Image (tube, rainbow, N blue to C red; front, top):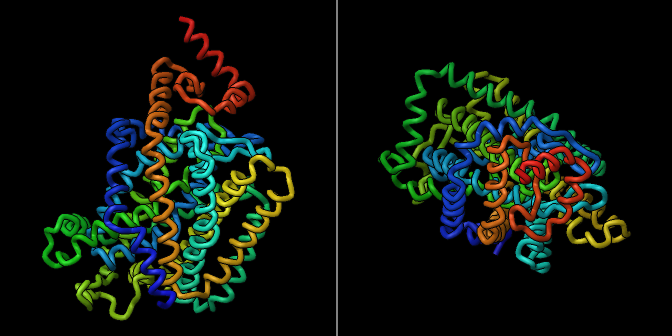
Length: 498
């Protein structure tokens, strides 16, 4: 079996129908139990995004949001959307929306849990699935297993997808040899990640908002310029999503599977990666960062992924593969799905648009790899948390950072299909593990939102006291409250006396 066939088999194993339905079911489950906070509490999400500041130990809510969004907004938003349309037809876009809306519930739970059981390692907050698996489920072995899985996925498998996609786009738009991209990309990456978590958060906070706004703005301009095609674009998406378009009937089932698959790859809801950025934030209550991270799922899929879909569909810059062979639609003969977005923008701004997409992809993919580096740091911190000042921790952190830089370099010049398949399989493995865990930890996850809303109704700025939620193993929060939120804690105690 060659490498491509092996990677395809591994990817298909983790992304079977059971996984697709599990992710959809988890999103529905959490959304219903929490009474759809992604609708009820949108104002809180936006308000909390810009409140709070970083501390010596933690990044600000916005920096945590930017890191998580940096991890979410990457090649999945450009190349991933294009591949979903190629394999699943235009209807796949609707299912990306669906998993984003429902996945916001899963994103809240995992982010809140990461905050509940975060730890202070080397003077910085660290959190995520490995931490809440150990504290919430009482299993160090399972926590270590997830930490190792994250190191393999985020440190080895996933970074290469990002750099590889940018290299392909840069070669198509500017004719730059991938080896030059490999050297530049890995060199700049090394400079930033060896500066530690604070430097990663600072860079992400500067780059992500700027590029996301610029990219969505271009999509809106294209949509306005093609105003007459709005009914066509959305009609195409909805009719194909619900098997009401005879042209794409052959890929109806694939529209669901590819939409969910690429949606989760892009927005990471339930995957456990965004939770690791959430766990690093300085906030007074876990629900605050949970709501902020839920909003980042919206920004990723409902804004950035939709922008890509509009660009592609409004200009008919796509092909759709026929499962039986050949194509159902072939508007771009000989053009691979990875270049759909560039082709779309080039039809709008000839000679310039493709370059803009390549540059946007460069920034998006780079911040995603920065997020992966932060996630590997968090999990190395978990594995060495009892000796975080020892040589073993320092050597492991250095080795993981060198490994990411090396994998980015080598993957930039590898086959795109092999890189994508292994990376997608890594996402699937993490999602399998984490979705089951957060379902098992439903009770403490829901308790954080209930406590937050109860304090808000009393006119308080919510402060987390684990005992109020019946949560054990979160003793760090007593130290956090006394050190940074003494006024909020005093106000809560005063209210409880009444």
